[in-house]
Length: 355
Image (cartoon, rainbow, N blue to C red):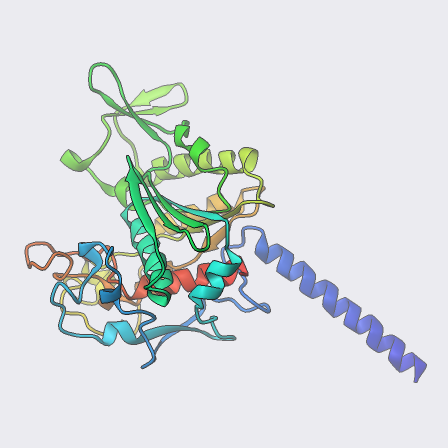
């Protein structure tokens, strides 16, 4: 009996050590981020759930027009009814009041482009809809939007910076993309939670290109391969996090690359227009996401990837399409309707924060 007991004790210890080792390896910048109890939250499927959506968009008086698809006349509503279901566990349902109570006195900042705006608005709507009688303060100072709930002394900040690195204008009007400079970072580091995003603006060319020259170390050139420039900028950001951010006090996340659906390979049709159900399959590989994962794996500090690319790829139905601004001349297959797909991203954020 004692031999059997000894064996069981040793075996249990070995299993525990193995589990701890596995979890540790996953938590430090493994792109297949563990959720709860060893479950990969990002592997699963979209299931129809009649209890969805999590909130009524008409309750959010501050929602951006471009995300308010129902108000802009979208007639179908099935896109609101899909819930992300991980394979091996359940994604915790969002409890806004509990979230606010646990986050009391803290600050969260989203840093990025209009996709960050999309996620920031989703979260503030989820919080506000639970207590529509609660006072809130919303203000914008330059490129920074601040949404505060005085009752909980919580702040949710959006810092507009599409490239993370700097774009400066010289005396002659030349706009320079500085791949080695992060002057805005001083405004980021004291947050309790940081969520970064960057990619879509790197694709702009021609008149929409926001720079005339690229400064890369001691080299200056007119332009370059966008994936290469993106990787250099991410490495500058990664060095800043590794050297300047105390990740025992500040939790850092990077939003995965949000897929758009403006080509046949990604949407199964000419565009996202008219798509009303999740796609059954998708084969598109996002090279930009692979670049992001490569940079995160090389970091020393703990950064969590909100690995939303693959699961969002199935949701061509979730874009505003022609209902972003209420007109067929403005087709939006990049942003997301609210309520909708982006709410799931915030459920991942909630689960990984452990609040």
